Length: 229
Figure (tube, rainbow, N blue to C red):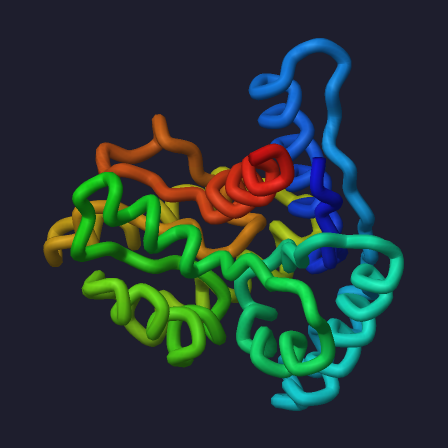
C-alpha cells in the first residue's frame, strides 16, 4: 500500500472528511481491518487565509511547498492538498518535490467526462470561481464552466469563510446556494461542482435536481484508490 501525504487544515473541518472518506474507501476495497497509510501535515489556516486575502500567493505557496517536502521526506508517495483554492500554487509546490501532486480539478474533470457532463456550474471561493488556475483544467478537458454573477460570488465566498470554515451550517445560506444553483441550471449547466471542500457540509445530492459533484468526495476517493492499485 502506498502512503498518502495530505496537506490539510484549510479548513480542518474538510480535512476530517478527507480522512474519513479515504479510510472508508480503503476498507471497502480491501476488507478486513485495512485502513489507509496517511501522513498529515495540517497548516494554520489563519496564516494561509491572510496570504490569500492579501494576494501573497507566493508566501502561501512557500508554506505548502515546505509541508509537501516534509511529507515527501517522511515517506509519502504522493501529495493530496485538501482544499480547492490552494491548487493555485501547485506549480510552486511541484518545483520543490519529486513526488506527484494529485490535482483536484483534474480528478473532477475525469469524473465529469465519465458522467457525460460538458457544461458545468462551479461554486467555490471567489479565487476558484474567478481566476484561471482551476477553470483552465476543466476547459482544457473540453468542459464549459459557468459561474455565478459578481454579487453572488461574494455571497458564496462569505458563507465559506465566515460560516463553513468555522463549522457553522445555516439553512438560510443553504437556500442562497440552492437559488444560485437553480439559476445556473436555467442557464444550461448539466451539473454543479462543489468546488470548495467545505460546501459538501451544506449542499447534498438530494438538495437539487442538478447532478452534484463534490470535489472532496472525488479527490479523497481518487487518493484512496491510488494507494491500493
